Image 1 (tube, helix red, strand yellow):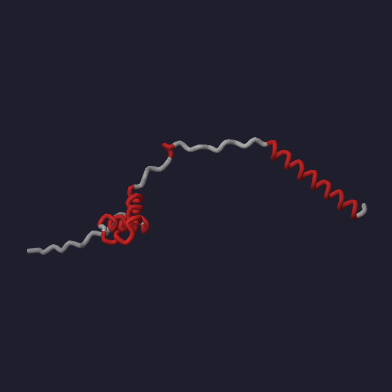
Image 2 (cartoon, helix red, strand yellow):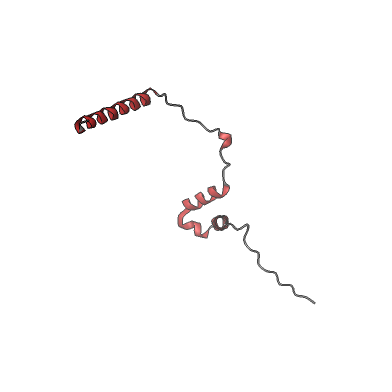
Length: 94
């Protein structure tokens, strides 16, 4: 076979495959998106709401005890701590 003829044959096959793929794609019906039920959504996180309020307070949040507690809880959650360590108690014996 001549190389020009082989190249033309390859181009024709490529164009035929491209046209077929385009025709298949155009006839395919688009499926509607699956909607999730509201019951499956995770419950609202009160810590997140508290942190959002502290963010909106800006510089005043530094003096707000609720913000300080929310930041401590967020830090503990991030670091994987269960709770803040308790202060050791000193027993004064007899």
